[in-house]
Image 1: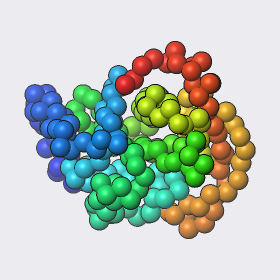
Image 2: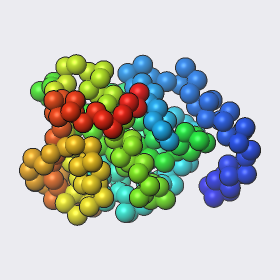
Image 3: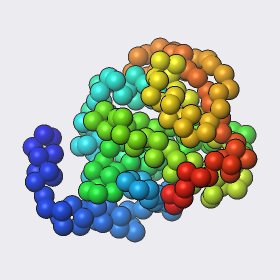
Length: 217
């Protein structure tokens, strides 16, 4: 896989642009998961070409222990199964691969999951460690939140959770306007136990007052 990453680094800018456009061919896109564009990111449905990068970035205990449903170790088979299940709609209806607009590089995932009440959805996200502390997660979450409230008039509020110890994730959630609601426990697949989490919520009215962060669609 390191060899594959090296070969990608050696490609010309024109080759990178063609590769990025190839990933956006209409037949690769899901109608229930519209492509989102922001200043530095393209967010689109995961596909087979993401498997190597997905397995490489997700096979990191620092990532897996901060999300609820990621196993550790994380193998190429896990990555392939994730892509297959997202294509089949088995993992929510709107799962995104987060990629860099400049070269199409896969850097993480995010998604939207509906609650049973039909008026609330929950967003989740993770980013590969090499891309932390660069503002990518906040940028992706802004795009995701804007998409939900603009395209889903039936949704009144969006929830988000983070581990109590995950200061960076809490900061992302707060930057997106979410308000603290409470704390509790959630299962961690990687740790095989329940962990303390904080729960946040953003309602439509608050989002409308915060739209100064700009359009990302």
